[in-house]
Length: 71
Image (cartoon, rainbow, N blue to C red; front, side, top):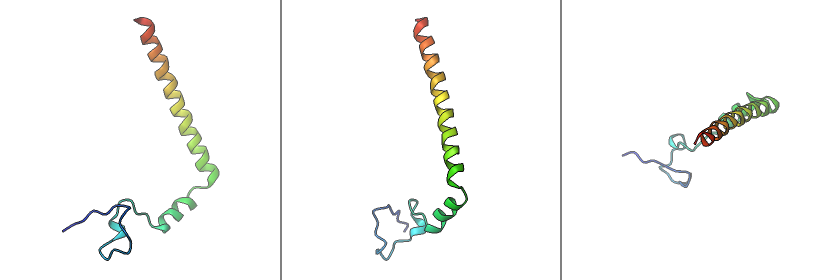
């Protein structure tokens, strides 16, 4: 029998296996991800991604405006 655990499951539950919980992340993996990306680089990547999203939204707005004008 396989049980799916959620974040509401208690670690005190004898059947709880954190590695099988999709919401569980070990502290070592968090530390690895933080150390692999310095703050400046991560922040710059986030800004670049948001800039791309903004440009994409501007293009969509432009297309929608053209569609409205043509009606």
